[in-house]
Image (cartoon, rainbow, N blue to C red; front, side):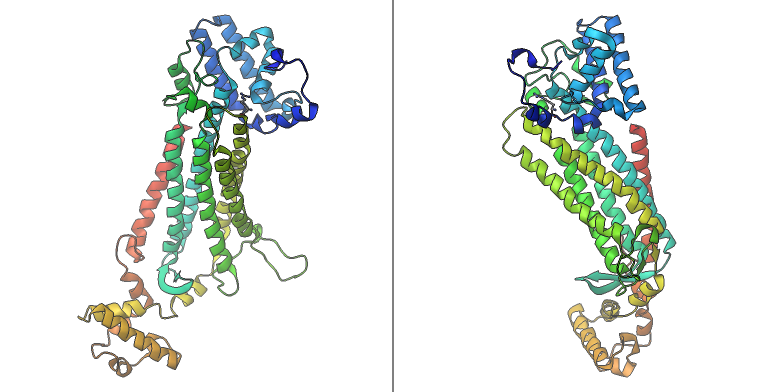
Length: 467
Ligand code: ARG
């Protein structure tokens, strides 16, 4: 039986009927639909609409539906179900008879879908945060293993200054920690319960909204029924956060692709995550990285679809809202499938520390340190900059690095140079002078790694507490 056929005299056009259904994709919400329905059933008992026996029958029926779905995917093959809400009602009536029809008293699918989606996003947030903590942990392990290995840091994709490999890896940890933080913000805002909002104006029965909210681990009921039945801000927020996370993945992937090219040779692609060429026998291609970069487009597409879908929708519920589901599912599933793969890749990748170290020692990346040497001897920085620039010029003519200029040659630029200048040009000294919080001096990086470890641990604990 349909949920609304009474006032209709003609059947639906069969093609339209099939086309407007959402069960094909909203079956993902089944577990949440069952949980929300149980909370509603208990509220119906509180309102005197069902008695204790009926409540038990309904709750057992709902539980049974969950069990059957878990047992066999075929159970979900239903050509009649319009959506997950209809499916549950149909199955419930099959299992427990007409008392099943009592479940829909005083509620609307508009509040149900709003509730199911909040539960779905909340669970997805917890999963993404757990996976981000795992990825962060692996990045930190790799940073730890890198010890004091150095590499060039680039600005404008030109060699700029040497940094510790660990410092570079920690940059990604920061991005992912920010993503995890944004997810918490989103979770805090979404954790209110629409149940009891009805179709638009509020439930027509005296349902205890606070109890329903608590039942489902929401912090409180939503404040306004018009807003609650058509708000999808939390979906947009979540998918936007995911699109930013995907953008971080994309930058990571791009950098790893560059670094794995023979031109850099900093990174050896793990075979387990690469493929070959059907034509060129020598090839090993960075497929995981390229697909990761490509998925970012898809995530931005999902986020954009959602914004355009919501733009201009009058209050309150409109069927357009059904179209917010697939971009949400796509974004969620894409990110959740990506995260363990990126983590696996990070675990397996080999760094060519030798090539990195070698690159860290050429290209005048000690020039700023050289200018700092003069600054510490009283030379105004602008003049020191100019003079080291001249020294670099001299090196370019001689095809050498700053440390190969003789004191005599250096004195032609500034008489303050002394023997200790050569020590300050060494890679270790250049790294060591960046001795500020957040800088690449080894002691600072060690501290940063310990801090990051703690922040990752607290994500783990928090996710665990919600589980
Ligand atoms: N499948 C619908 C959706 O996803 C459920 C809500 C239907 N509400 C309605 N008034 N037709 O939005």
